[in-house]
Image (cartoon, rainbow, N blue to C red):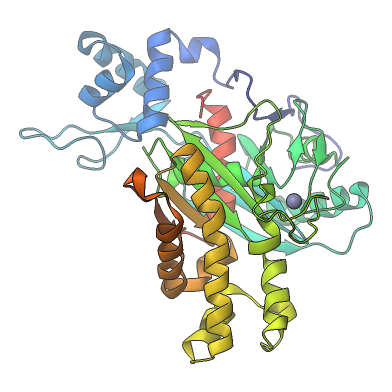
Length: 407
Ligand SMILES: [Zn+2]
């Protein structure tokens, strides 16, 4: 990685609703059949040739030849038997999956901190560091501090990256210009995607942080092969990456501001300028304020983990705040379930550390508020990979673009 002389080719790709053109050349992707095979793997995870034929719509007669071509070119490789696809009696078939095409860079910008990683295309994380950012007053200062942090972490690795995924909390335009962020005041006007492309000499793929988490769960995590789920990030703000029928919801504004759905008509003023947003009742700001009202110790730095620990020691005020927190988080989940029938919610962020007691209460609140006529409840679970999910999400955004598949 060099600071002043970017190699030719770095550019910015903002993942959006428009059809993507992948980095694989048209000759590498080849025919429609080959594209269908790659898409079926992205949609379902590792598959045997028989299952691949079924899911891709490529005939059994053709699948062998298509797979052989992709194996020869190193686009795919064979996994050990029994690591994917359906079980069958007889000779086990070796599932096919994407071959490692080289390391991916991952950059996750959050308030006051940037997380930087290097991830293989099978999800192994070889580098992961969080770098605290100094206080900044403008987008230019934020950009400089973030690029510095990325250089500090990636510079010594000297690994040529095939692409860099950049996940951040904000709306962005089709050319990667950051338009709005309700979480980081200095982010609008940032040129970080272009600056990172110049600094790393490779393509930077930009994605909203919550949607990146959903992509990470889909490629590497608990949602591989799952077509309908939401990755719900609950911390300083609330964001959701919602996947329905195997595709991420983006909408024409490429916004995913579920934290700003109104849940209280006369509620608190939100950072977005409206009142009673879900964030005003379920973000860490609410948790700090509510902890102060309840007389809990060090309320201004209260975390879900410490709140649970206090509740577990028998502190009745902490138990009450924890229950309120579960009830407020449940409000948004129930709304999303009623509107979109999302069957699986994977929770991300500091809330993961609230533990099983909180999760039980959350499920009870969701059950109590869900329309009984639906005769169904969503599954709610915690991210099992909390320390690595950020970089896996950013890397997943890069790999989605790099393979030219649609998610
Ligand atoms: Zn709001």
